[in-house]
Length: 108
Length: 115
Image 1 (cartoon, chains in turn brown, red):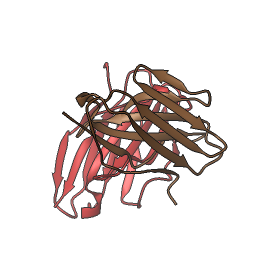
Image 2 (image 1 turned 90 degrees about the vertical axis):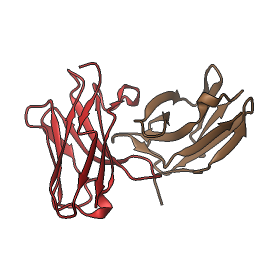
Image 3 (image 1 turned 180 degrees about the vertical axis):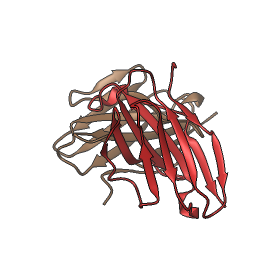
């Protein structure tokens, strides 16, 4: 079983839609959680950290459920520029562990 | 420099050839990481340095893979006797503190194709 599991998608949504991605992790000792964004043929870049209390950054909301070992990302009012692969990332006493990524295509 | 620099950007190698991939981290970043990203997959951890010390090499897939960072700055990932399954993007990242996931900066990667 992979340490971080994500639905690979693709998610094809129209502009303006709300879309949610989910991720589960297996290592209960994981301490920090992130969503990274990766554009085609580019390097991963940090999108946002994820906290148990939930955090919001503009149209993006991230949530962590430690009991269920579950992480989510909600994107509201999708833009064409949101099209990318979204990587769920966890870490503890080890370097970053990445999920396979979920591909999002926002269509005009 | 301002970012993590990797070279070459692209490398085509014949099966059995040795290759060397270079990573120049952000100045002052003590931690350096190598990841391998196959097509359609997330990055997979290969190895980690703190300064010149290689603290974790558990992700190196075989003894054909070797990494070094002799002066605690530039790092080289070497792959001997390349195989087709080595075809992937090799990403390097550096960080001031490996426990702070916010602080990782990735280079653009080296895309290796073994033919």
